[in-house]
Image (cartoon, rainbow, N blue to C red; front, side, top):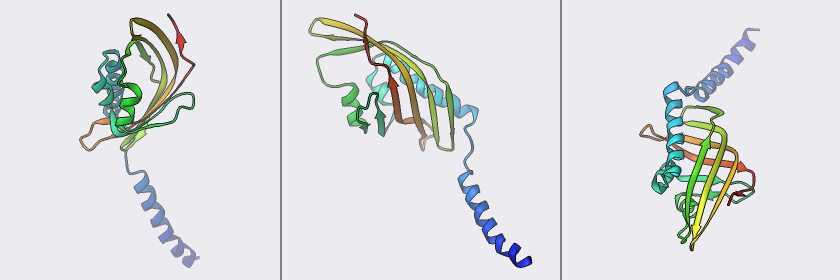
Length: 166
């Protein structure tokens, strides 16, 4: 019996070390949750202010967008800029951007936020204007940077097809 116990001691030590290494990072504290909420609120406010750099500044340089309806992922800042802010004559203005927060969680240097959103916007081009809206769900994954700031690494959303309002 003593040899069986002795045989398990190294296994137990390895398992404890693995669990400690895996679980060594703390679950998000209230200050981190507040910081994450502020990043997502700043992102929302930047859209409402038509602040391109504010929107893009919410993301890491290698961020990935995973749009709705099977649109291919958009990878990296250059591609994200072109996806959302193409160099066309059309001007898009966000009229409404409401976002619920249904969950915030994470551990260590990674976090997630999920919820529902509702967006309305106007597109003006060559003297014409159209207004659109949609609503759906989202999931944002954030990573804590070396300077302590949280940034979005992945943004996933799904919504109903866009509805033309006028």
